[in-house]
Amino acid sequence: MDSSKSGESQKLYIETYGCQMNVADSEVVVSVMEDKGYVVTEDINEADIILVNTCSIRENAEQRIWGRLDVFKQIKKKKPELTIGVIGCMAERLKEKLIEEKKIVDLVVGPDAYRSLPELLKTVETGQKAINVILSKEETYADISPVRLDKNGVSAFISIMRGCNNMCSYCIVPYVRGAERSRDPQSILKEAEDLFQKGYKEITLLGQNVDSYSWKSEDNDLPTGQASGRQGKIIKFAQLLEMVAKISSALRIRFSTSHPKDMSDDVLFTMAMYSNICNHIHLPAQSGSTNVLEKMKRGYTREWYMDRIMAIKKILPDCSISTDIMTGFSGETEEDHQDTLNLMTWVNYDYSFMFKYSERPKTYAARHLKNDITEEIKSRRLTEIIELQGKLSEISKKIDLGKVFEVLVEGVSKKSTDHLFGRNSQNKVVVFPKQNYKTGDYVFVEITECTSATLIGEPIK
Ligand code: 5AD
Ligand code: SF4
Image (cartoon, rainbow, N blue to C red; front, side, top):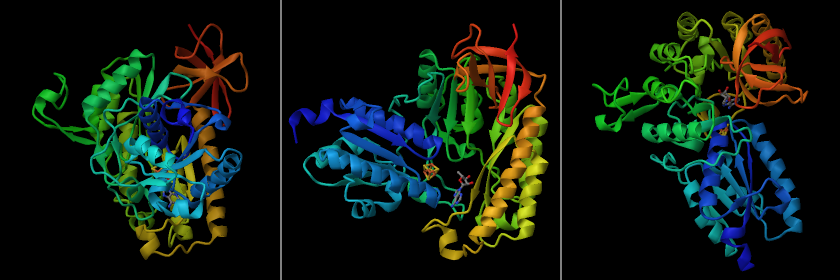
C-alpha cells in the first residue's frame, strides 16, 4: 500500500444504524481513530476506510446492512484499496461469517473491541482480514472522550452502562452486547460537565436498562453532599441522575431506557425534585397481556406495569410516557392482542415504537418457542396498533393547545427557514417563528396549533 495512505492521512467514513447506544458508540470509535490520526469525512467517495456500525435487533435491520454492503462493493470495485469494516451488534452476532458471506469485508469488530480498531487496521494494511469480537465484562470506554458527530451542538448522548443481563426471551442484545456493566459515575459527571462547558444544553444518559445502573464506590470518590455519599457505597440510577442534574439548571437531562420491572419511585422523586430533568419516560411495555409477558420473560405482569404507570402519573403529573410494543410473539392470541390495545388506551401513550416480532437465532424464544403467528396476522395486528397510537398521539398533542412550554431550540425547521424547532420537556417537537432566537436558546412558546407529530406556537416574552 502507498505509505502516504497508512495511518495519519487516511479518511474514515462511518455510518450508524440501530439505537442511540450505537450512535454513542460511533462517537467512541471516532475518538479512538482520531487519536491515531485518522480524519473523519462525510463524503463516502473520498473515504479510505468505511465503517458501518450495525444493528441485529430484527431481521430487517440486518437486511438493510446487507444492502449497504452491496453498495460498498460497487465503490470498492472502483477503488480496490478501500477498507470496509463491519462493527457493532451484527459484527458480534455473525463474526467471521460476515467475511465468508461478503468477501469485500476486511474487518469485523464487536461492541467491546473498539480500542483495537487501529491495530486491526494495521493488519488489514498487510492484506489480511482482521476480526475482534471478544466481549468484555469490564469495558465501558469510561476514559474515552467521544467525538460528537451530531451537527447541532445542543444535545448529546452519554453512555452510562453497557450490555444487558435481562435475557428477555426474544432479544439478541445480551448475546451481542454482553453482560451488564455500569460506568464510573465520576467519568460520567466529567463528560457531562465538559459538554456543558462546550455549550451543550441537553444530555441523554443511555443504557439498555438505566434502572439497574449500580456503581460500588469508595466514599471519597463522591463529591460531598451527594445523596448516597453518607452511608452507602452503592450509587444507583436515582443518585447518578441527581449528580448530573446538579451540574447546572441550564443543562437538561434525559435518559433511556427505563425497565418496568426495575423503575423505582426514587427515580421519579428525583425527577420531581429537579426541573432540568425532563418530564418524559420511555417505558417499553412490549405487550399488555400477562401471558405474553411471561413468555417474553419480561419479569413483570400487566398489573405491575400499570402500577408503575400510576406511580409516574401521581408523582409526575406532567410527564409524557412513550413505549415499545411488539406484536405477534409466540402464541399471542386475539385476546392478548386486545389486552395490548386496551393497555395502550389506558396509559394514553404520547408516542410508541411498534414492531412485529422477529425471531432471532440463539435466543430462548428461537430455541424453545414457536414463531407461530402468521405474517398476515402480525401485519394486521401491527396496523391496528399503529392506528390506535395515531389517535393517542393526536390526543397527546391536542391537550397541549393553549399551554406554554419552555423549548430548547435544536435548529431551523425543515419545512420553513423562518421557523425554528426544538423540544419541550415532554420530548414533543415544537415549531415556532424564528424572530431573533437561535439554536441552543431556551424559549417560552405558547401552543396555538398542532399536527399529529408537531406542536406549533408563538414565542412569548
Ligand atoms: N423482534 C421484534 N422487536 C424486537 N425488539 C427487541 N427484540 C425484538 C425482536 N426479536 C424491540 C423491543 C425493544 C425494542 C428496542 O426493539 O420492543 O424494546
Ligand atoms: Fe442497539 Fe440492540 Fe440494535 Fe444493538 S441490537 S444496535 S443494542 S437496538
